[in-house]
Image 1 (tube, helix red, strand yellow):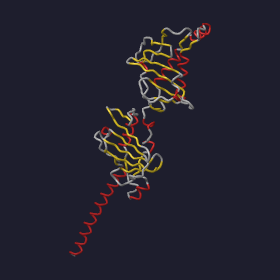
Image 2 (tube, helix red, strand yellow):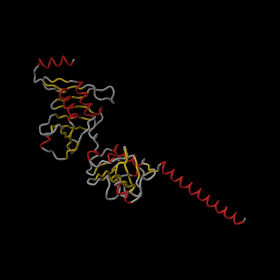
Image 3 (tube, helix red, strand yellow):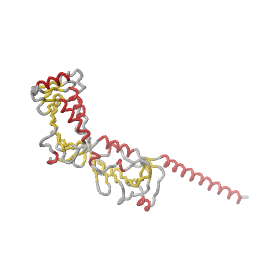
Image 4 (cartoon, helix red, strand yellow):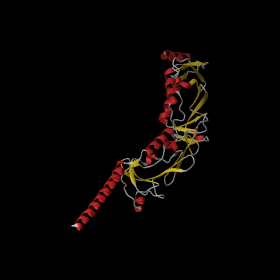
Length: 324
């Protein structure tokens, strides 16, 4: 009888242990299936981003609160911040694989990867590392945290981690506040803004100063041109040295804007053997290219904005009547 009781007691203890083990395992499994943060870092602590593929490397660094590329050119801060938020929000569930062979197969090793990302603090120490490998479905990729050997599937792609300078440059660098322009020069034509009722609005009316004979002002075209110019996005940075093929020695159009706190001169040229337009602004060292479909409206609007008839009073008179 005692032996039977002892056996039953032993079985009860084993059963209890098995239940506890299963419960703990289920809880852990459930926790992983619900998702945990893949990368443990605070977005405000990241001051350097390194992104690599097999051939290229991009370095983004924060200075005085602004993100810069390695050459000091301003980076798209909104894009960098969006990436950091996305990385901080990545969650993983159950691992896809954990073996060393799997790491190679999914291309998430230290030597083989589609993208490698490292986040650093202001002291240069690594905050997090991520290896991005093969695709895992629509907008999904296999990844590995640098501190782990497990492979997970997350919503991230190589398109989120580009390694070209063009992808990270601040394409809105040349934009300005519409209401900040006080005067405008188009070639030899000088225009000043009339007093505005609302200082927050762009100048609604331009008054000519000592206009060349026979020159008329198309207020609508000037307004549209200024609106387009204020929202300008360049396509590429061509470099810091002028090249003959930019054709800026004889520009298609020269504009000078006078702001409340300075001025800027724009020179537009036709790039040789290309549909694109070259651009040099006086307050930047770089030369830029503009896509033709973005540059053409600017050229046309300012060309139509002021028209000189070479003292042909008849033609000028007809145009003036038409403007009225």
